[in-house]
Length: 364
Image (cartoon, rainbow, N blue to C red; front, side):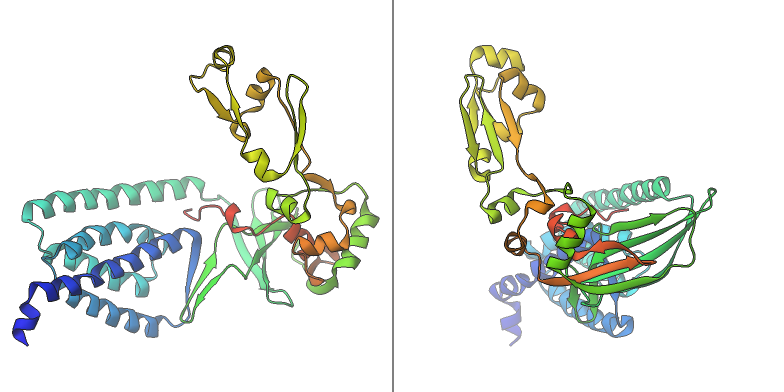
């Protein structure tokens, strides 16, 4: 049995588990940027994470001279930089992996010179990263005092809202934000709440401390009728994907020689415009061709190309069937602020309020 554990192939096989632990650390770093962490049971989770980290540490110490373990020892500490900054204070999730990262770095099979050089680089990374983070957060920190005075979820549970009071030098303000619960990632003991997609649906000045929030479930056809009564000229800008769902062409191209074409989205984005020597000089570029969708308005004007965009449509022009194709359910959540409608699921879906591709970085 002793010979089995001393065998180099056994150690190489076990070392394959080191990148797995590093992969979880890298995934944790990614999640820290885009999600806020909520630990439902800190003590229980800390015990579980500590046990898993201890097992990982023992396996990495056993294979400390293997290439994959040495590589992992170099990557773990950099991977833990963002979680340390963004989840600072949530020690139950930070201490176990940080201990593993520090211990395996010092006890890995890498030479002392390599440890000194890499350790100095990692230390500088932490010092500079921490300095930049705290300087930037201090610069962007609001000088006002904000307090969440009310929060809750919609009737369907899809949306979460907060009422935020701001006290400042000009009588303050009351703000209502809505965000989607559907984008959160729930891992039993952990909840990662998506950042950077909250939508301000009401801002009132001066501060109003008498706020009543009411959620109702309303039908798609009724909302369409309400919006038409408000105005027949309400416009909405659809994405290329939404235009595809409707089967509508989004672009019309007119060239300087008079040729014209109405194009679907994929065709438009595949167009490459060849450039003559004269046009290269005009645009001050050495490229012999340019993608049409990457050209600036100024470049298009110089080449005599006109692009007309049909993605902005009147809401009243969309039929109930088309709304269904665009993903608007037959009924959904509507929010009323002191009796006034401020949020409709209908508009949120059409305007893609909570499209993950529009997410802001949650670094600050």
